[in-house]
Length: 343
Image (cartoon, rainbow, N blue to C red; front, side, top):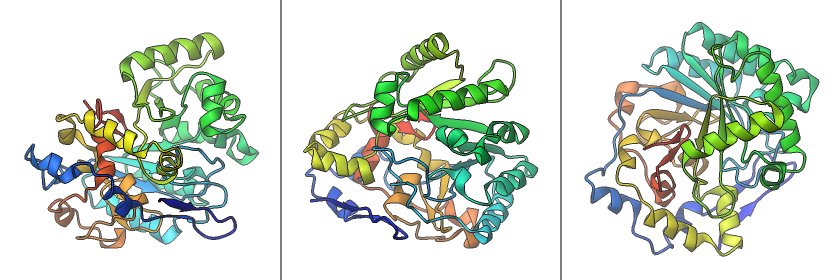
């Protein structure tokens, strides 16, 4: 069965045979599902977002993490690759740059890169795990740095209770997250009229799919305001993808087949039109290009233009998007992407 290797002190850990593992599940191929709806081959729409993984190093080790990030990861985007990303952004029609990790703030050139992006007048998103803000004094000023550069902050908070959050992300994470949220609120994030966007992300526990994003947002806002005087703008619900650590969990707990069947049974025929791989380009920490962040973690590279140094938007727009069984995760229920519910 699936094996996931984690090696402290090595430069990487890897999941073995994840893609071939998908082929053994006995479920209708995702490509056949799209063919029945005349969506295969799947092609991009206009490029709107360039999502960049600044490295897999992180101060947390979360059970559901599809990046398999952690403190022992050494993969970090170099300054030369960051400069190549800037050039590609300048030569693209993308209006949004989405920075992720790991903890993107742990890249030694993070602040320089954000400052350079702000000069390009693009929308900047930073996917901040919150605890990094309070993890070390050198990160304590991040809320103000984000404000100066008009960064939109998107942060994972699996629940508005300590027990559920800590069970997924580690002991003490909830308390640190609340402290960080208050620091963001103090400079205006999540406050009405400031224009400083603070979005939270919900990932389910176990093999559940996300509930209604709109209804859950109401609960989150009520509980966080009443219990902690914390405010935010929107809640995004994201389905856990059957890759990396979550796939490992599904396999070890004997839930893989049940989870995949649930994804198939709840396939939403309206979701393919809105899939994030159609308007987003994903850049790996080493500069290689992917259709989405999930394909990046499975090393399913784009074939036509492989690296950011060879960026050519007109060629990329003609490609066929690479698909596999994990793509059912983005089309289940109300659909799911890095920006939450799709339909």
